[in-house]
Length: 356
Image 1 (cartoon, rainbow, N blue to C red):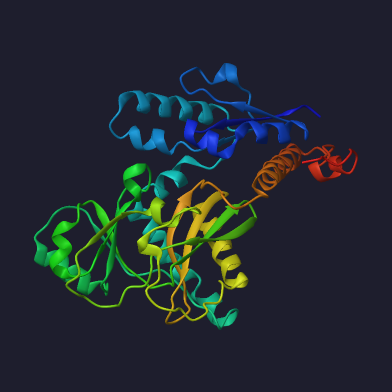
Image 2: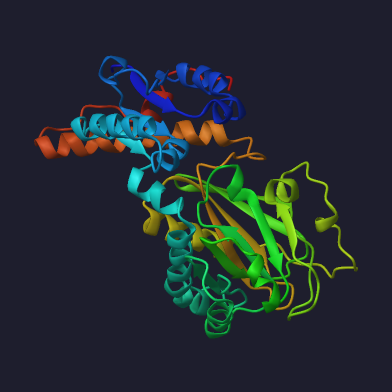
């Protein structure tokens, strides 16, 4: 069987964090060649690629205002269109939707509705929801924004996030404690009801049909309802990274035990999101409401860092292999010929186990 070639396009920062060299070494032991894609050069001579794994978020966002990024993105899209047999992880339209919090929050709202039946009949002790939110497109008169906050059933405090869900500015957030402080927001942005969750964030990392839940620090509890407290401005990376240490995560009171998320509920959540997004590499941020124990979805992330998931490399390789096996089988079926291509699992039984 010919060697499978997987193209990777990642930012320098993402490449270093992922340790792409180590992943390439693992792949090489399984007959898979990893090729780093250079978007500044024609893609044709760099191929062929059986799969392209990418995080083009930087390019997509910069293409909104930068002609060079527009050209890089157009060249990439042209290559993908001309090579329909190349599998893209993940599709550009799906990624573009998640870069816009206006769009991703609509997805979360629809998710709540689609999972309602599951929650009632399969995990009666758990409910899944997303907090009420409001898209703020532009600076309007304060009275109209305050009215919409009330109409959409938002409750103070509110957490304010930028519309664009990528780049350093996307991590700059604020907590708004009263209607009088709404004048401090900078549209376009999203306002979301803050839910007290015991300063614990559960990051769900998805790799194909597998997922992993990792616990992280998060914002401490705040009393529900408006108050005259000044707005709090913070960077989410400084609050919820594994090594984070912040006054905002230090609980002011003793917290009763909060059970971890129901594995059945998380599995249903991931399954439904995979269908709605059409993606294989993404993350979901969930919290547990301290009052109702409701599993609450607060964000969806493109190709996250997978920190705390030691199985990430093996799972990613397994997913790539399964995607290619399925495509080979589908191509054979479409041609009307019997399948003679051994699946990756069959090949693995014929070769010594990898040390990785």
